[in-house]
Length: 399
Ligand code: AMP
Image (spheres, rainbow, N blue to C red):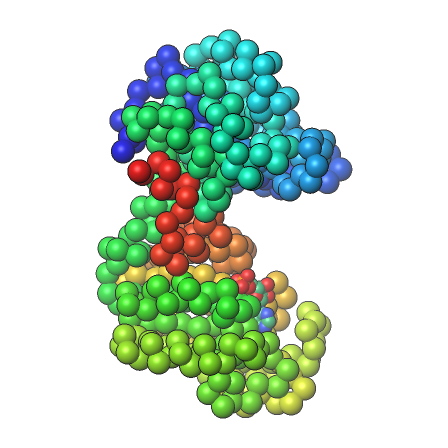
């Protein structure tokens, strides 16, 4: 397999799939969070510094029927230029076609050509081979650096790879970092290894949990999914979130954990609310004795202490999903406590990987993103990888 470190881009034109699906201000269309743009910079720098040129492609938002101004990648140019002083960023107002092919051909060393939104064509998400071959036209090599879409067999993330031989297709630095982080956790973990699964539903996380059980020592459960476990064990859960059709599944997980000698930590106490509201009245109770008319929206103080202890004594930690409704201040303490415990564990030498949209938001909210080992950029892609699935975008480069 080719690697970006070993590849010399001098005199070469590289087509690079990045994830510039960035949030924009609704009126001015300015980029409001450039994390994803910054994530692609090491790969772009390497190509340009070697003396190559980069043709950059991405999707942005979910356009329905062809081009829509609000989803134009043109809005991203100024932010990209800000990060690449002195570099010429040209724009192609179509991602395929004769004019774009001419622009690719006339691109000079050290220059960038940003292509218009791939999803202005339905062929992109359909994985159309003809469309993918047009994207591949006029370039020497393909670099995939869009981890967030690596679980999709789209034209630009997967199908395009077939038009390049093994020596001319590779992952970019961002995907490499993601793969190293996930492999560290899945295949090179040090014990004790603790997985923390939170968020709303068991059904979303079940496959990840099943794939992790043979590898982990501790499983910490938090968030809304707590109550499916509590009810399955005969507890009283009031109005708390519960997936009635997953009670058997919860018991099956507990049995499987026991078989694998995994210690499962389910919250023992909770902060309850009398309604799902930021201003709700609150009380604290045991999770299995939630009063009628109340719902558990955060883990309670005893649980926080137990979880903190387990986390601090772990050598490898994977965290996905908040411990409570952390979007509301009154129910954010449990999630913040876990975030802080993770940062402490990291400073004591543990390897900590945080993934999934909401836990990433939680770690950022607590200002701790640079105090953990790795924060994954791809929510869905990371979860599928953790489920043990082979992601099409990864396979396309590896085979
Ligand atoms: P997920 O996308 O599955 O990781 O779920 C994240 C969502 O779960 C967040 O929006 C939280 O507000 C929500 N959540 C966490 N804990 C609870 C809870 N105890 N009850 C209801 N929703 C919760």
